[in-house]
Length: 295
Image (cartoon, rainbow, N blue to C red; front, side, top):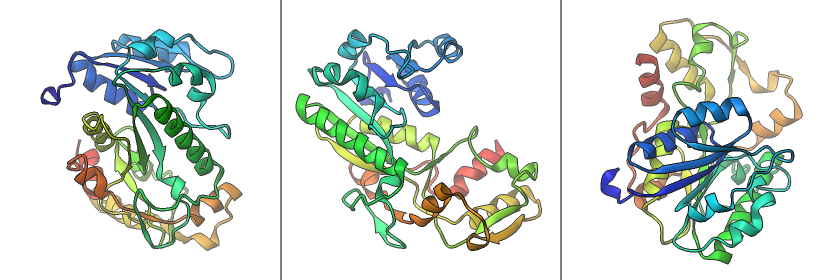
């Protein structure tokens, strides 16, 4: 990273979740200053113990003054989930964000859910965003809001449309080991798009260099896969029996679950390789899960 010319920079994070924290720790090692927000005092104390400067932002109750923090930041990244109004950061800080000047880099962590249902077709960053789910629609609103901010103050904006994130701390391996998956796994031909958290952080770092042109990047690995294919792989590595496979149509799903399973697509990741020259650490779920299991 020291070869990327990223020294003496300052990052502001709207929402210090797992991804932003991992990203920030890497930057802290390189001499960056990191400011950000979280939702409660317990998390604030934990993050400040890591070396970050943190303010509590919990809409609508606690809205801190962060004008100076944003003005001095060279990079701003947003990982707060949107509401039906779009991005909460823009809802409360629109005027401040519109007033940002200088060579700023803005990053918004979105989701591949915006694409909606494309069946078995592959989608890229130019594909139509036709989601019918509430969460997907909220993401589209937030993306458009950030694009408007970027256009008004002429700052570079990178939107990251991210697949299902997994990591050593966030995966289903423990559930397989403990046999706590309700004894079944859905057997269906729906293929899900995933990304290891290390690769998501790596893509964002690579995008820091892309500070002159705004882009949208799909952040997924090379191989969408079904839930039962992943289950077979995990059980083979752990040398445990397979859970019962149940067809999707045989399950009683909530309305939200039905909407989720209706929206299918296969997501291309060519742009992160071509534009950002990023090489995936874990090209598929196999490499990523094997590394977690063997750690």
